[in-house]
Length: 286
Ligand code: GUN
Image (cartoon, rainbow, N blue to C red):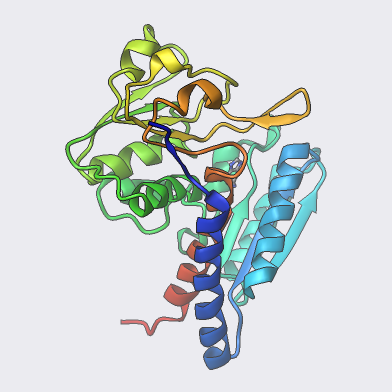
């Protein structure tokens, strides 16, 4: 049986409309729109495109966006000054530092400087810790997008075996904790995992975020598995995922394509997190 192919654009559109409606109502009441600051360092073409998409999406739903662009040679101190300024800025609810950063900057020191109450990407240790201890506040957008797909397709997570390929702090690790919280049995594989296929073949839910085009083929997937492809790879000018869509889709029950699967959801979930930050910052203090 052919898989249900996830239309990430349509789901993202629905989420964006919800965010837009709530943003309009709240901004009219409070006399201030939510604000997101996006920091981009350098000219990495993928990062430039991601940031452009995020800024455009903000404007479309009525969120104010401020883009701060510095060359790859920027000093760590300058970035820290920018973040400290944004932390204090009352018109900014969310701060996002586009990754990766140039090596000399030290990614962690920058991410840790962001006020956890404005950390819409969920990369600050206190937000990562909240997720680990079962009290999540901000969670990274891609893992949230993955959970949205599972929920919208009625995928029961409890008791299922979820296998994640890729252990990044942006996708693999937070997704593992979200799934554990929902009572899945979770296996996390990485590039050093021997016998990768033996693990992926066990998956009821297979999430692939390894950044390796065509890594998962038909023989690595169980009949009826839910397959979420988070890979975005440019091959001969085309965008492809980590899963060989043509051979795997006849075997899967649900599958996300690339492009048009998880990607649009990541941006939509960022908008939702920015609105959440705005609502929390304007909430009366207890
Ligand atoms: N680079 C790749 N994915 C992401 C993401 O979700 N957030 C940020 N800030 N940078 C990224």
